[in-house]
Length: 162
Ligand SMILES: CC(C)(COP(=O)(O)OP(=O)(O)OC[C@H]1O[C@@H](n2cnc3c(N)ncnc32)[C@H](O)[C@@H]1OP(=O)(O)O)[C@@H](O)C(=O)NCCC(=O)NCCS
Image (cartoon, rainbow, N blue to C red; front, side, top):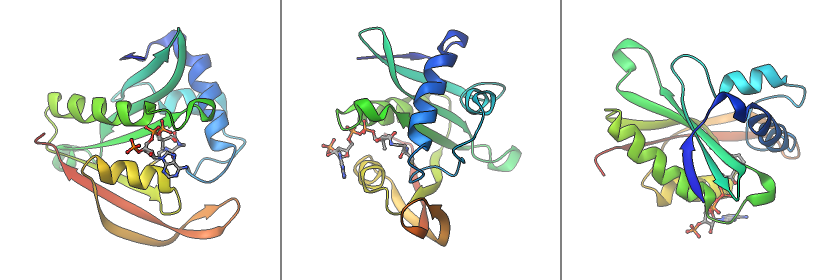
């Protein structure tokens, strides 16, 4: 597996993965009818640094780094990850997470914050904890889970000196 910067011609792959990930309604706030343009814009455009994971020429996952807040909050990074459900559980998320931490540190960020990790998303919560993130806050009933109804979301944080 290789990790490389996301380029314009990845748009179809990004859209396919995005659509498959949000279809289950259990990890991201996006509604099932989110458009291709919105999906592609989420992972590209001004202020977005994005990478894809590629396996045998196929894009199997992606992540982006943005400033968590502008100006006086801009020293903290925020990131979002999506791995193709067909390729989940094979270590791609972990590799992308490690890459993201290094990249954010290289970019000069002091810390990384995830603003909205769905509490029932055990795979993500455990992965982020194993990469050094702590749950620093719980947002009660903040997510409308497709199967479970209202569930909590976590704010997760870590400093970046690796
Ligand atoms: C969360 C996500 C990025 C993880 O990527 P992945 O490639 O599936 O994860 P990995 O294969 O690297 O596994 C990560 C860890 O989760 C664990 N794991 C795997 N399947 C699991 C499951 N069903 N339940 C709980 N933990 C699980 C693995 O043991 C692994 O830990 P390890 O490396 O110590 O063995 C990916 O599944 C995804 O895109 N999910 C949908 C979108 C999402 O939730 N994004 C993150 C929002 S915060």
